[in-house]
Amino acid sequence: MKQIIIELIKNNFAVILENWTAKIKHLVNDKLSPSQINTFAENSLNTILEVADSMDYTSADQYLIDIYNLFSSANLNLLEVSQLFSQGRFSILVPVEMNTSSNIDPMIMLGFIDDMIEQIFARYCMLVQETKMKELEHDRDRLASKLEINKEYLNSILHSTDSAIMVVDNNEKFISWNKGAEKIFGYTESEVLGKASSLLLPDGDKYLDELKWIQEITKKSSRAQVFETERKTKNGVIINARLNVSRLPNTDGSYTGRSVIIKDFTEYKRLQAQIDQSEKLAVIGQLAAGVAHEIGNPLTSISALVQILQRRSQDEFMTEQLANIKENIDRITKIVRELVDFSRPPSYETGTQDITDIIKTAIGIVKYDKRVRKIKFETDLKHYLPNVNVAADQLLQVFVNILINALDAVQGNGTITVNSNYDQKNVYIELIDDGCGMDKNTLAKIFDPFFTTKDVGKGTGLGLSVSYGIINRFNGEIKVSSKLNEGSKFTIVLPIDQN
Image 1 (tube, rainbow, N blue to C red):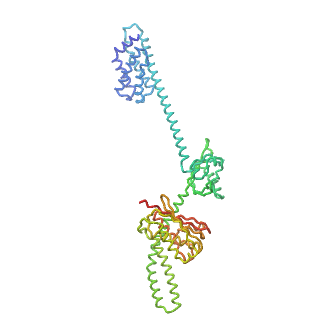
Image 2 (cartoon, rainbow, N blue to C red; image 1 turned 180 degrees about the vertical axis):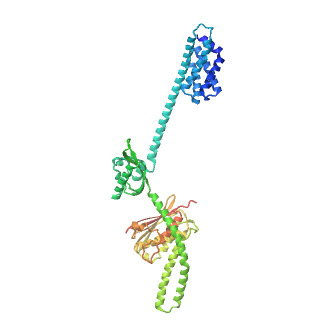
Image 3 (cartoon, helix red, strand yellow; image 1 turned 90 degrees about the vertical axis):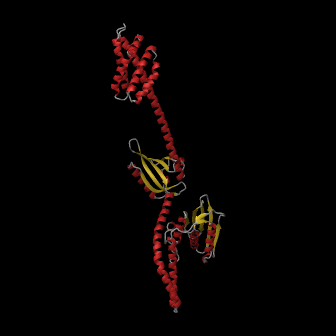
């Protein structure tokens, strides 16, 4: 029977192919091109002939792979593919029914053909299913790999970030603590887990009240909240901190704790204070330039007139009063001169300088002051300090200003120490006295123009302001530490000239 079927298909190949392609064109709605339709129908008929001859369905596997690729690219589903095979069955049915040369019942032959086509289609379905399963396994493995990578990535972020990341449960206990938190606060994870969140609070009711407020607002709001406050490290150091607090909901939406990200803003605050100080000095500098100009000219005229009157006056009382006037004019002249220095634009010519020579010159100038008789000067100046790019006369002015303040602080009896050192980037000069020192309020204002703790007539309050501006123009920094009745330390940091 199979030979009869093979002969029937071969003898009517062109008619079957034409009928089959015509029916397929109607079904696929332009998903396949005419050449693709013709190739599919022709290869299908050849495969049916090959299977009918050998009765080995594995010979159809390559054909099935080819049409799977074709149908996948055309987005044909299994139902549509089934209809394509059904149309092939109907196309073969016509010559089978018209066959009169064989004694075999056409229904039997048709059943044989149906069985072959169904087996071929079944193998196609198995191929589709197997391919889909492999794709799902690949996607599963890919997603699992991606999840693992994401997990490692998140863990890396969690433990390598400089920010402190922690989780507090609804009992106000720490349940998570990253390496960033360890760096900032000094506590290890084992030291913190299970401890109360108040562990990081500085002393005082203010911070306990703040914590209660954070708890309340976090429970009520699903949005992240940002706070600026202070926190305490393991060593008791108070740091400026910015908190980013987020509510952690339970599966039913109820509050189960909060995540807290803390950034140490201490350095940021310090730099911001420097910027504010620079801006304040810039504004005062503009005002100072105008004031110095308006006062300087008439002051010169007044001073000249007073000196003329002094030379002509024979009256003792008048001479004494004129001397008093001249003394006050000189004081005003000094203020004007310092105002000019304060407001002067950074136009001085700079060059590479040996700081050690400038320091020694400044100490030599200050030692001429009558107040240094009982004051001991100690120096530890490193030999061969790297050069810095500065204006020597301006830097000399800075050292002299600070040393004169040190003379006032020790009040004629004490020790003034000058040290120098350096690293790969900067040169450091320390000017230390064991005098009266300063409290926190005074320390916060020492660079403000016209601020002075000296008696009226003994200081203008511009010395440190001018010094601050000079060092700032050299891309340097002045750091000050002081304790009341213990003394003060001024540290001048200047970048090394890399040229």
